[in-house]
Length: 152
Length: 145
Image (cartoon, rainbow over all chains, first blue to last red):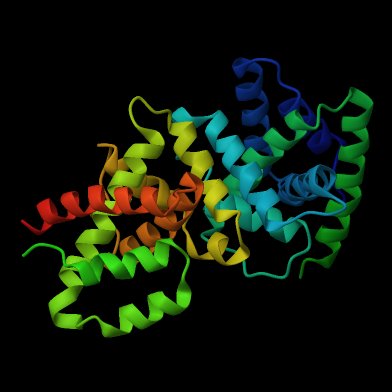
């Protein structure tokens, strides 16, 4: 099943939210989509957008130290709420997104939360113009559709 | 029982990055007789090093960034130091939180790895390292009661 325009638009709205209220509203729409009959594809789209954003941030060459420092930088920036982003999950997911063959770690829930937070932070840090964000989401959509086709 | 010169010498060799001497001196320690004093010495040195580095007041971000810096010095350190546990071990010395749920083995290895990074950043000369260890020994003696 293909990723829908509505799913892409919802993710775009979430990533470009200008206020906490907008982010909350967009987040609710994403959660509703994930729960509804249109659920298929949204998880892959979020994951694919995370992978594309990660590669934009770190490619072409990166080291484990780069990943460690980046995660710490994000956590230090939000130091009053350091429990939110699990450093082990965040580093693990970034390394896998960058193509390293390592076992996923720690729990699926922590990894999913880390992907979501990292996607938001990465797109913020990349300072994308609206057209660059559209291009990123276009690449993510293509990757997500490949992932959904590969799913058993 | 106070910390002995032999126990201090082992830690000194380790912190001076003299691996051959460290292995030689460590092998000479008596597991039953020396382990309490050596662990107290590591604890004392770690507490002193954390106090020197962070002092008061400190920002949570400083601790997060130091741990990341220590872990990024090698892939081995990145794998062996758990970021959250390391931050909690440092914060405990600074009077925040607890590490009661962390195993003694993890606690000891984390302290030792962080201590190496903290001391390396001090760039002590011989006299400076001796003064640091003397101060740490006083604290270790208090720990030993």
